[in-house]
Image 1 (tube, rainbow, N blue to C red):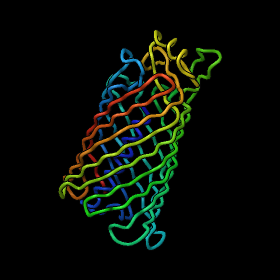
Image 2: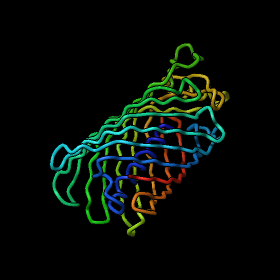
Image 3: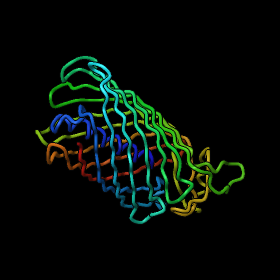
Image 4: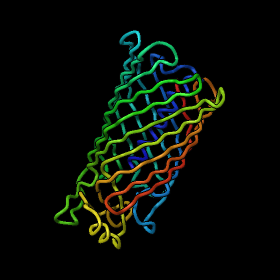
Length: 298
């Protein structure tokens, strides 16, 4: 679930950066203010490996980012910002959350002109408060991104990111296995392309590969299968979906496709989808996300 949420945030960041070429060049503004309203539907919210255990839900996200750019040199800038995100779930309201984070990024262009390549190391650190308390905790991302425009209408970027989150221990249900399910870390490599179809319509596509911890849930009838088939790193009782929630090591891939329509110099309407597949030693995991959002960038 966290992989999907971070993928969505990275896609929204891509929309924000790419739309500036057809909006107001907001990446060069001294001050940044970017509110976002997003609605999404997840087909396998609990990321269960068992189709009979899958749960879907609708989610409303309200986000606000504010910050400032500081000029470091002729081709370098420092971006400092803070994010506030509020998520509300239609059915599984124990997942309702409020997150606040701080972000630091250095953007350096390797030349002059539109087609000059750029590179950007970045750091995020924050805290998420979830209604189900054991899911609350700190989180952080450390990564580096790079990209360039190949034409006036087409650009690509790539990134490598390490993500870590720390939750709280749950109830011990297997004496020999930890209950710290929400202590999670993984690596993500991504490649994204943006194509300006018209002066107002932007097409964005991305593929990602992740390697690290997967958090999944299953009903009590499938716990035995999970423990028999996989090297489970942590497991505890699940108050949100019932049964148990567990953490194990795996890897997988996701793909995203978005359309962004500029409705003014500072705002856009966006629709998109993500499809994620993951695999541990034996079990496989899938999730599909559909989303629509309104973004304003000032």
